[in-house]
Length: 152
Image 1 (cartoon, helix red, strand yellow):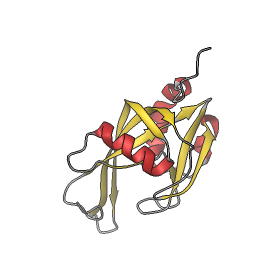
Image 2 (image 1 turned 45 degrees about the horizontal axis):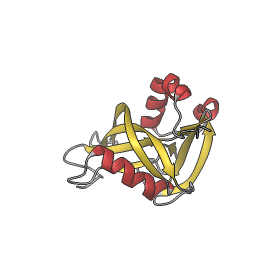
Image 3 (image 1 turned 45 degrees about the vertical axis):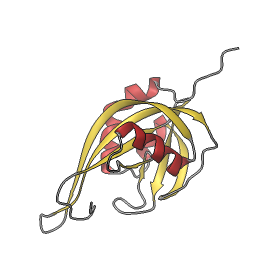
Image 4 (image 1 turned 180 degrees about the horizontal axis):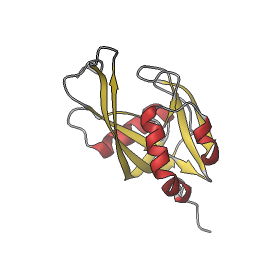
């Protein structure tokens, strides 16, 4: 499937990792939205479920093993060129995940990865789709936690 000037929308997934009022954001290293901040994610591959894509992309982009993807929201992103043609069209399905194990690190198409306090997220140069997601879901993210605390 071609991403630039597609014949149909592409299905993408976003991976929401939250701990202690902080969220993992990546700085995109590729188009679309190169240099802007968003949650890790990628496209669903042919024959793959959304949940399988979440687990695979989490490993590829953050080096973390995740489980139990929980649907948070669905956001559409359409980018038009100056001639009125659709350059990109994504339907992004965002999932909160639980982290099983791993050491978080930027990989794949992330120029940078960082933990960002939720109260600072809006000061970053965000992708349009993530800005809409964040504005709509701040309250949910404040209550979320991707890391299950060990009970002693």
